[in-house]
Amino acid sequence: MFEINDEIEKYLSARGKVILNACPGSGKTTSVAYKLQDLTKETTEINKFSGVACLSFTNIAKDEINEKFKFFSGVNIKYPHLVSTIDSFINQYILLPNFHLLNPNIIRPVILENSNLLDDWTFFLTKYRIGIKPLKFMYSPSTIQKTISGGFTSNGKLPTLTGKDLSTFKNYCSSLKDWQFKKGILTNEDSSYFALDILQKFPVVGSSLIKRFSYVILDEAQDTSEIHFAIFDRLIELGLKNIEIIGDPCQSLYEWREARPDLFIDRINDRKNWDNYEYSFCRRSEQNIIDVYSKLRNNGNPIKSTLEVITNKIKVLKYELGKEEKAIEKFVELTSTFESNQIVVRGRTMLQRLLGYSVNKNYWKTDIPTLLISAKQNLAKNEIKMAVNTVRKIFVLILCPNLNYNEKRSFEHELKADFETNSHIINFINNLPSFELSLKDWTVNTEAYIKTFFELDSDFNLELKQKQGVETYDSTISKLHNINENESLIPISTIHQVKGKTFDTLMLFLSKTSLGQSISLNDYSKPVDFPNESKRMIYVALSRPRNLLIIAVPDETEDDKLIELFGKEIEIIEMNNGL
Image 1: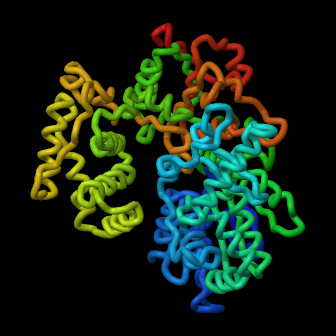
Image 2: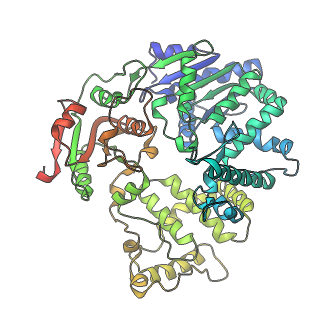
Image 3: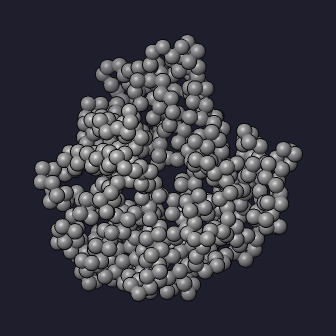
């Protein structure tokens, strides 16, 4: 049952150029799916070949919209309507059919799923150096993006270079992008840049697209890049009348992928050209949890919980550095009566340390064994989709090792639609040889297992690297990769991985300092202006739980400081006292 209040009713009735600024837990995705029922009817009544394009930043959000639309309507969304990611939409409807207009020598460009391949394919760029160090190793090709203004960024940021060094950087980037353009080898970020170029130079492409999709919904707009915004601004210039921009600027986490929440805020403030709506209610969390994360906001109305009762105090758990596992054990104890529990950290380095494993070292001359280990670990943590996607890549490497990149991608997409193959993937992972075997024995057994599973005519070789020492060869896979047999019982992930999700309980690990990828209590304060990325990270994490929020902090933190930050009603748990 979808309960419609006054704020929801206003949004559902809105048409034209619409902004929805929705706080965490307000059900914006549910609102979008519910509204789609009317929009899909309205657009096809005007033109049966014209539909709604509902676009989101991630596959998770896209899938959620599809599932909720089917829940409300009883049917899947279908032609002429579309629910897709922004990148897929741009590639499918702008870039791929029209790239030949920019480069007649390339019929269809290759869009890399893994941009890191550029790092391996561009050795010729080593001639660009600062001093004796090649720029290629300072600013990896996979991180380089061209901006609308014609400049270049690395990981979404301008380089801190000046003078001759900056000129060398620009020449390095120009050489890279010229090579990609001539070869037709693009990243998703490149495809957006060239899609905008197509719309600017060939307006008929945009006009045709507007006829195909007369209503556009842009979900998770806080993570939209400058180029993405420019693409939709161009479509508005070309006649798009109905467009919705939906999100929460404070939940923007993808600056490294060129996210520009400030451009979303500009549109929120542009009330002359946009109709502005806001969700200031939360159906997810109890009010004391909301009060804690609301301190990190700098705009919007106060958030009010629709839940009338507060069932648990905010708990602050003081852990000893280097003994984080004790805090995890305490979390498991405190949440034993709840069904959905989660621990979150910032960054994969701390994530792997808490999980107790790392697959960074490769003991073989091929990537297949480490991919197999990763897939089984993902399956153990119930990350089924990630495990299945990894195994599909393995299948391609095993069955078609001599295909080029484009051919491998095509075959991988074929496997995705092959339901018979997909039905065997989980069994393939589950029946892998035990990780308690030695490196040498596991390799031999896995070679035999792969040969049998795929019914190969010849032996399959997972060749071990030489000169690793007898101790390494005799060590178990579990020991070499620090695989904890109980890791599936410990629900730990990064903040990025829980974005958009809801749990009964959640514990956020804060570090001693905010150096590098770390976040700490130093980041928890009311922002003067728009909150920086560290504050937004904490905001997203703290807004996930329904009933119980636990914040883990180093044990040297004074109680008075915790009370000052989180209020007198918190419960402080001292781990070093055995409590």
